[in-house]
Each structure stands twice: as C-alpha cells, then as structure tokens.
Amino acid sequence: IRFGEYELALVELEALEKWLKRTSQSYLKKIAQRTDDIKYDLSDVLTHMGRAYAGLEKHKRAEKYFKKAIKKNRKNPVSHCFLAKRYEQRGKTKDAKKHYEKAIKIIGDELHPLVIGAQKRLAAIEQDSK
Image (cartoon, rainbow, N blue to C red; front, top):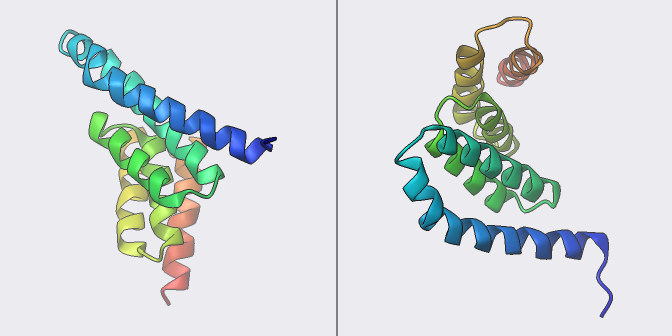
C-alpha cells in the first residue's frame, strides 16, 4: 500500500497524539510541578497539533486540542484565536467572540498582527449578525 501525503500526515499525527498522551501523563506532569514553563511549552505543542488536525480537516480533533492548549495555558492568545475561528466556522458566534476578545485582551497591543486579525473577525461577526 502506498500512502499519499494526507495519509502519511494523519499517521504521523496519530503517533504524536499517542506519544503526547503517554508523555504528558508521566514525565511532563512531574516536571510541570517544578516549573510553569513546561505548561506553556505543552500548550504550544497542543496548539500546533490542533492546527495540524484543522489542516487535515479533522475539525473535532482540532477543537479538542485548542481547548486542551487553553486549559494548560489560559493566556495563550494563539490558542484562543484558533478556537474562536473553529467556533465561528460552526456558527457558534457568541463563543467565537468570547475567545477573540480574550486573545485581544491577553496581547493588549493594538498593532499586533494577531489583534488586528481578531478585530477584523469580530467586525465580520458583527456585520453578519445584522
């Protein structure tokens, strides 16, 4: 059987998911007790996994990973933006607005590209609701 790029990426993501479960349940938990940096790093890993699943159009899994990332680090604006985008795609505009607003508040810089993007999405949601 010859796998295409999509199938190969899916296999790699599933392997990474299994590794992450094993690792986060043992080694990373022990280390996380000593430093908050691991929580932030793990949040970034979870966000990247969510992005990868979204790219593969595995949207439920993507959403799950964005939520896990936020649970590990509630101040991760990137995770909030991706989760907001996912909610927006599902028509859950109230939830989307909440997460875009959280990302904006976390960053706090009006000129930051993520803030500008979140503000544009909020304006689009407002426009669509009229």
